[in-house]
Amino acid sequence: MQMDPPGEPTWWDITRTYLKIGAIGFGGGYAVVELIQSELVVKRRWLTAQRFQNMIALSEMAPGAFTVNLLAGIAYRLGGMGAMILATAALILPSFVLILVLAGIFLAWQDNMLVQSAMKGLTAGVVGLLIAVVWDLVKRAPTHWCCLVIGLVAFLLELAFSINPIWLILMGGMAGAIKVWAMGFSRKGSTPDLPTR
Amino acid sequence: MLIVYQLAHSFLKVGFFGFGGGFAMIPLMQRMVVHQNNWLSASQFAAAIALGQVTPGPVAISATFIGYKVAGLTGAVVATVAIFTPSLLVMYLIEKFYLKVREKEITQAVLHGILPVVVVLMLQAAISLGRPTVHSFWQILVIVMVAALAITRKVSYGLLVAGSTAVGALMSFWL
Image (tube, rainbow over all chains, first blue to last red; front, side, top):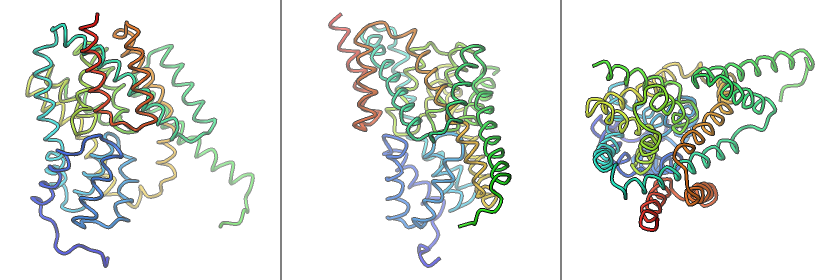
């Protein structure tokens, strides 16, 4: 731990920094990761680069927004539960206020002709974004027949019965676990004494 | 009061099962908000997602819009707290039981199993969002342009959403 920063950050330090990240973290996702790294790792040295990488791996396992998970996890390490809750609230606050204002404007004007036409463009844009995100996910997915099968089964189940997505997610997770368990089993059976590297 | 409870319940579920990043929450939200509870129309839901993109925070902040539409300021606060609480809880558990989670093979396998499901759900979400709202050829052009720009040029999502909104506004003068 030779790289430990001088002096522990207080809750106020953490909250203030998170408020800043929450206010300027436009773009979302991995673009914000660079911002977080430069603020917390390079500038303030609250954690080492290696720990940061570690936190990224852990954050990807939790549900929900990746950047929120990452920052919440870091805040917990820096100051415990209280710091985590306070800092996350600070992180979300700027967006929360901004979206409330925008929601108020939108709901007041949604019957206006111009706004309705703008909405048509906006909806199309969101559909385009969803397609782009799907594309990214497909590229990141491991190319394995098992993935194809899970996807196909989910598609058919959704099409035929319109099952609640939560059940599909649970089933996908179970299928992934079963696959690894079965492969571990067959590995033990077929090639028992492969030298471990 | 009941509706606030329903909001909390729905968004806790969305938060807890949104594996695979913030966008993975969209199909879950859409199902609960548009199809099950009729809280928002398809195009209002699109607005909620789009406004979530032009604000600096994550996609999940769309919950604030939905909560506000359904039950005012109380609804906004309840929905926001509810959608983020599961993330914090899981991060807390991961930190607490760090060593166990580090045997990552099984965790990784579960996530790899979820990923194809998320892909299917998001395609489904795109279709059910587009079908009732896309009627004209220019909208299809916008979809193609936005998808292409987001994939190839890495243009920021907020900018793309703002651009498509501007195109929509311009089209109202033309038509």
